[in-house]
Amino acid sequence: MSAKTFLRFVHTVDIYQKTTAVNAAGQKTITFAKSATIPASYQSGVSERRIEPYIENIEEYRFYVSYQDASVITYNNRILNVQDRAGNVIETGPLEIISIRKQMGFGGRLHHLIIGARRVVENA
Image (cartoon, rainbow, N blue to C red):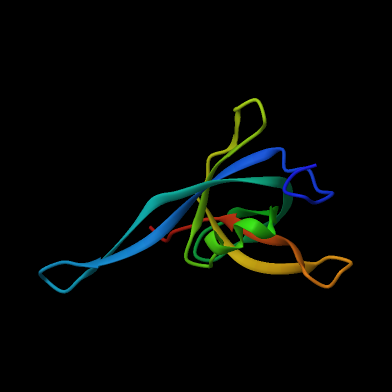
C-alpha cells in the first residue's frame, strides 16, 4: 500500500510549475520549472481527433494521486516524465492538467485525486 490508501502508486511524475515574467517591452514570457516529483498511478486514456487547424490526434491520460500531494496539483502546472517503478520513462510530455476530481473515502474525507491530462498542443 502506498500513502495509507488501498491504491498502489507505482509510477512517478514530475510536476512543473508555471511562472510568468514581464520583460522590458511589456511582453509576458511563460516558463515552467520543476517543483516536485510525486508518486502516481498512470492510465492511458482516449484519443481525440482534431481537424482544425490541422489534423492530429490529442491523447488524454488519467492519473491517480494521493491526497497528500493535492497542494502541488493545479491547473497551471504541467506533467512531464511519467516513469514506471524501474525508472523507465513511459511518457515524456508535456501534459496539461484539464480536470482535477477529488475522490472521497468511506469516512467522508479526501482520499485521492483523479487528474485528467492531455498532451500539450501549441499552435504553430
